Each structure stands twice: as structure tokens, then as C-alpha cells.
Length: 253
Length: 253
DNA sequence: TAGCCTTATAGTCATTTTGACTACAAGCGT
DNA sequence: ACGCTTGTAGTCAAAATGACTATAAGGCTA
Image 1 (spheres, rainbow over the protein chains, first blue to last red):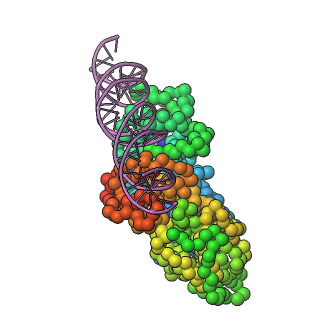
Image 2 (spheres, rainbow over the protein chains, first blue to last red):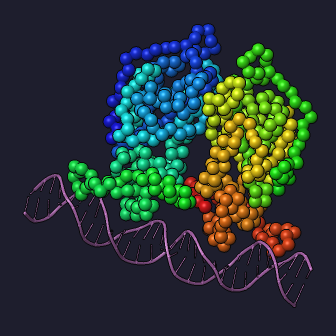
Image 3 (tube, rainbow over the protein chains, first blue to last red):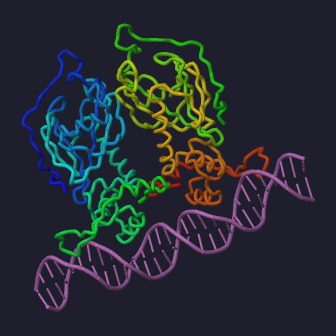
């Protein structure tokens, strides 16, 4: 599970470098696109709390304030690569499945000059990461989406949009599994849905519905060291899902 | 219905203006963002053929070739406003409900220099528009999505993505109505779904499902001048939809 | 060790929804 | 008047859903 709580244990970074050319309308590192940035919205699950990954800005405008981990795109870099690099540099989170969320471009969303930002998002499992604040972040941490600090620019708007998007997406695509460890119990899956959809579900009915889809393969293993009857572990079977999808199956919860 | 056929009747434009500053790495009109553009993907329905709105480029790179109607964003202009202005200027189509589709930014998607483009899309009803090619387009026309001319840059990729997106969206949100005239018959609605989902649906079952949602209000009017029994006309009731949505209803076909 | 938690998992049952059909109605056109 | 085409209503078995009940497995505690 995610180690940090709301007022989080975070990782401090040693020092901050500030690059940029003088006498420009706005200071920018060399070799990056002007007027275009990336922001990453990374969701994680801590028990049954949905969390989002934030950094404390270590350079540029609004240093010291909390923000989505993002930054500038290199001239010769594809968008998703930029998102991935920035995320990894700022937080240490590597190789999540980043998909594009939406581009935010209100004229005055960014001070100093017009900057349009492309938001990417990903769901990551607690297994898959450890936080290490990077070059231009002084801290990185996970925050309960219901208890957020104040964020720079329009990052609250991006986050709200992302949560709504996630609620939609999770009902029609099997993306929720990305938030869980590889092997999980049916109750974990159910609690995930309850956390994101923000409502209770009936346990027997939920498991019946999920099992009927045939998307889970039985690990033939039980939970360890729980103070009650141990539940069976399952993993999501991507191959079966792809096969069914080609046959016209659509995932619905 | 849409007047033009595949090899379309199109609208010619008188002349083409080319604006831009000399000695720049790439000629661009004044007052626009560098490196960022908009492209619009506009779908229309002609009987039961899904069509897309294209223009023949009248200026800039690739003049004379077919493309999605798009262009540059003004410095002080919000993104959707830019999309709307460009669409209107290039084709005469006014005030469709434009939503953002995706941002395309492969390093070499555009020749000469790096340009990232934000794709918007909209569904328009045959009632709502008449084509008038504008300043920087020499022709505008509707094309059957199965019989397209070759398109500039990565516009084929944008279109393919848009069609897939539409197929997803139309199943989970009542957006299909936007492609129909205000008053329509159940068969028109069904044919729309058949055209977009690319499969046949059972007539009695389709109408039963739609009617049970209570989203259509009866116009108490019949079709006119058809060579068979006239069907009842309905309109989509947005207010009921919003009410139901708040109660947790979700549209599914 | 017996009984008490807690969670897992199987199953019941009435109601609703689906998918595959059949049947009949209403007009136009010959 | 008959047939052709499309509209609209209804049947029926199968499947899915929602609200439950019942029982199984453990660890924990008195």
C-alpha cells in the first residue's frame, strides 16, 4: 500500500537548479517548446482511499507550492515521452501507462505568458513505485483526493476533470485493475470501485458480475496473514480481455 | 440532408490571402501562437452514411490538398473559441457543440517545424449548416468516411481516432441525436446507430429499449410525403436527460 | 478449547431486461 | 383491390439483476 498519509511523509530533495536564458519574455530552459507544457495526473489507491501524486515545486514560478508533476517538452521529444520523463524525474514513478487526458489552454491559466498544458493521466498500483523527489521538485507525496492542499494555476480544474473522467472510464473499461497489485482479492476490487464511484455495492452481486465476465484468472493462492478466512487471489487476464473485446464484448460495471 | 456526395459538390472561394513575416523559420500570420494549431473533426449524417467535413487548403503548406478544417490559435483566444472561429471561417458551419478530442504532437507530424495540434470534434445535424468555403480554403465538402481522399499531415490518424472515439461515445452518451434533425423518427435514430456502430440492430427491440429510457418526447406529428405508413416524430428531451442523469441514470445502447 | 468475530463464498427468488420472433396496422402505388 | 413497404404492438424463453439468506473458514479471546 501507499506509505504516506494525507499530511504525508514525503521525500526531500537536496537542491534545486534553475536554468533559463536571461532577457527573454519568460525564463525557460534551452531546447524546450515555448508555450506548451505537460502535467501528469497520477492516481493511486491506498486501501480504499483514492490518492493523487503531487510535488512541491522546486524551481520556476510558484516555487514551494504544490502542483501536479509536470514541466516542459523537449523540442525533439514526443508528448507521451515527455510526460513519462517528467514524471520519473520529479517523483521516481516509472513506466505507468500514461494516456492523454485533455489539453488545458485558457488564455490566462498561467501567469507571465500564455502556456497551454497537455494533461496525461495514469493509474498506478502500490507495488509499482517508490517516491523519490527529483531535480525540480523538493518533495513528492500522495494526497487523498478529499484532502488536498491548494494547487498552483488551474491544477484543481485538471484534477476535477480527471476524477470525473476516471469515474466514467472505470465503468466501461477494465482500468481499475491497474490500481491494484498484480494479485488481488475480489473484496479489494470491490472496494476500489466503491472508492472511485463513491457508493456501496452488494458483495455477492458484485462478485457474480465480475466472475461471469471470465476476465480473472485464479492464482490458486490465498491471502496471507489476515485475521479471518483468507480470500482467494486473482489476477486480471489481459489476453482473455483482448480476445473477448475482439468478439464484441464490452466491459460494463 | 447533406447535399454533397462523395465526389462532392463543393463551394469555391474567390481568392486566397497569404500572411506571414519574412525571414522567420516558418511563415506564420501575426498574433498567433507558434507551434500550436487546431484541427476540427466534424461529423455529419447523410441518410445512413457517416460523413466528415474536409477543406481543400487554400494557403500555407500543402495548398490544394484535402485536410481537416483547422489553423492557428490567436494569442488571446481560448482554444475552443479558436476551433469555432476556424471552422466557421473555413466552412461556414456555425456554433456546433465542439468538444476536445485529443492533442496530436508527434515530433515530425508537420513539416518545416514542430507543430502540436489540438483536435476538436463535433456532430452536426443536416439542418444546421450550409457550406461556404472561407478565406483560407478553396473548397469545403462532406465525404463519406469510407471513401476519403488522401489527407495532409497526420489527419488520417486524427480521423481514425475520432471515429473510434465516436463509436465509444455514442454507446454511453446520448450524442447521436446531434446528428439528426430536431424532429426525427425512430428508424432514423436506429439507422444512425447502425451507421456508426457498423452493425444491424433489431427494430422492435431497439425501439423498446429507446422508449423505455423516456428520453424522447412525442411531437404528435407524423412524417410527411413518404410512400408508406408515416412514422411518428420525436425529439430528444435534454431536460429529462439531465434530470435522470442527476439521479444516477446512465445512457447505454 | 469453545464460542465469537470477521470475511469468504454459495445459493435463492422474484423482477427486469434481452434477443429472437410473430402479428397486425397503415398508407402509397398500380 | 392487392401488394409493397414501413410502423408499431406483443409473445416468450433465456439471461441478468437486486435484494437477500445461509453456510464456510479461519483467527482471536475468554
